[in-house]
Image (cartoon, rainbow, N blue to C red; front, side):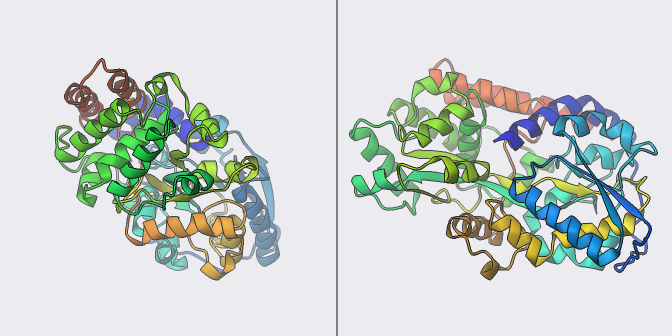
Length: 442
C-alpha cells in the first residue's frame, strides 16, 4: 500500500518537471558502451542509496547482495539509507552534481525514472542489459517500466533501469467464510458474482472497499480489463492510440460497479473509506473478499491469526493491475558504472531472488524450487501465472499526473449516485485526455 501511495505522490509532484523534460529531451549514455562484467574493485568504493526497510524482503536481499558484491569484487560499499521523499525531491539536483551516488533505487514510471532519463541524468543501460542478459530474465511486461523513449514515456526506447521484484493486484478471500457457505474459489466471472450474491443473501457485505483511495479504482480498472486487449492497455498507458471511455470495456466496468453498489455487494459508505479501512475490515473478518495488491500480503501473514485466508487471480481475466517494482538506476555521473552493473546482476542472481521470494516479496527471476515458504509460493505462483501470459496491465492512475485524484473523485460520485455510469465515464475521459494532451503536446 505504501508504495502505491508514494508512487502517486511522486507523479503529482514531478508533473511540472516532466513537462520541462519533454521539451528538452536528451538521451544519456550510449547503447554501444563497453561493459566489463568482471570489474576489479580493489581500492574502490561503490556508493549506493535505497529506501527499503532493512526488515523487508528487498532490504534483506540487498543487504546480502552487498556482502556478496564486496566478496566478489573486492570493492567497498558505502550504503546510505534515504527516504523515498528525500530521493524524489532532490534527485534531479543531486544526480546532476558530483554528489551523485554510483547506483540508487528509484521509482518507475513516466514522471520519475522517465523524467530523469529524458533529462540525461541516467545511464543508458542497453549495453549492460546485453552483457548480463537481464532482458532474458525479465518478462516483457516487466521490461515496460525499465525502458523510456526520448520524452521519458515508458514502454519503448532504451533501458534506463532494472527491476528485481514485482507487484500485482489479486483477490484476497476468507477461506473459513467461503467454506461456511460452501463456496469454491471462483474460476469464472459468473462464479465470482454467485459468491458475492451468496454472502449478501446471508446478510454480509462481501467486498471490503475504499473509494476515497486506490482500491475501488483498481477494481474498476480490473473490470475494464476483463475483455480488454493488450493494445487497449498500451493505448491507455502510453498514448499510442485513441482511448474511448465510452467503449465496451469502460462501460462494462462502470455499469458493474454501479450494479454491485445497488445490490449491496459494495457498501455505499465506501465513498468515505480509505485503503487502510478496507484492509483492516478484511483482517477483522467483516468482509470476506478484498481486491488489492501484493503489498498487503506480508502484513496479512503477520496480522491475520483468527481465520484462514488465501488469494486468487481475478476470474475471467487474463490481465490484472501490476508492474515491476522500483528500479535500480545508474546516474550518468556515476564514477563506477561497471561496479554498479555488477551489483545489479548480483541482485538478479538466484540466491538473492530466493531471499526476496521466501520473505514475502515477489522475485522476478527466481528458480521455482528455491521458494520453500508455502505462503510465499502461493503468491509467487499467481504472479508467475500473470506474467507468463503477459498479464501485467500497470495501474489506472499512471497515465497522467492528476488522474489518481480524478478517478477516485469520479468513483465516489458513481457510488453515491450523483453521477450515472455514462456521466462518470464522460467526466474521467475528459480529464484523462486533458492530462495526456498536456504531456504529449506541451
